[in-house]
Image (cartoon, rainbow, N blue to C red; front, side, top):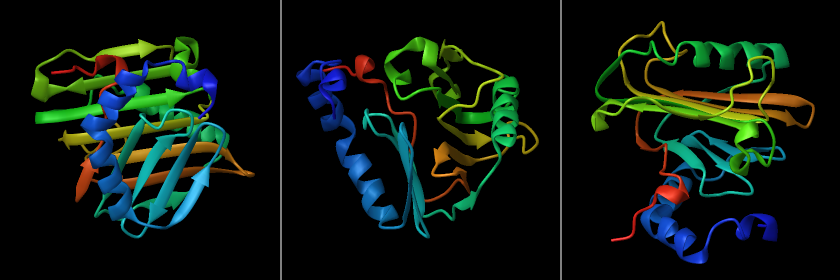
Length: 202
């Protein structure tokens, strides 16, 4: 990790974050195991017959993954990817969630997006916490993200939000391809880890 990013958070904050989530991340990675790695300038997605995970290259604290699921890989065009994320964005308030359900979208428009609100967009709704939707950054309807992830748990409406329960991982510019990974919910999962600035120290 470059000095530009290691200097962004104090050491004690990163240590606290890894203490809280590091074991879970390692467990998911181990359960997914070796597979096919897809990587661009911003993120890496690992896909195996056992599951898949997504991780930002310059910020491994930004992680999501699931094991014990059967991921499907497709190679959409740029226009298809933009249409997909616009659908996810436009239906973000319509996804019907059961008790304890959650829905989230995280999109990077450049490798620096995690640290520049102009190059990142994110929303999350978690009914278990009885909180309103949290939204930050800037959504760009005509731009293709370099990477995005979307997850739903406890969803009830199969027609809204592109899937009922599960996840999507997307990377653009992986060689001369774009990669989309989709899987239904199941097995061991870890999504929507608290941002480092929200980690509380007891």
